Image (tube, rainbow, N blue to C red; front, side, top):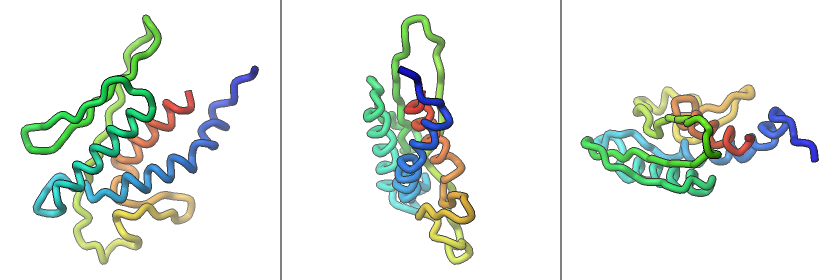
Length: 138
């Protein structure tokens, strides 16, 4: 059996990555309850935790922080003797400020000219989705 080339595997996973990024971008996860309800950040944290569990992470936890937000921790054991790899991303975003200044709704993933736009699509919800994609591709 021949392994599928990584670029081909990644290309096949992109539709799923887009769907997941759209789900994650939809959370108005601004870590300021004066801007959006804290439930938005909690929903995003739970989404991230569920995604880690779905990928086989054996230890997933939501950790309360002093400012009232939650960090998500996940552990996926590798083969014995393998080096440790740490992946980091955050799921909270900056406020959209004047939404009328946006070309598309900030919490709706939108594709224009082959690029994906939405609050957190690049920093850093997109980074988390790419972590998942890389794990799936390997």
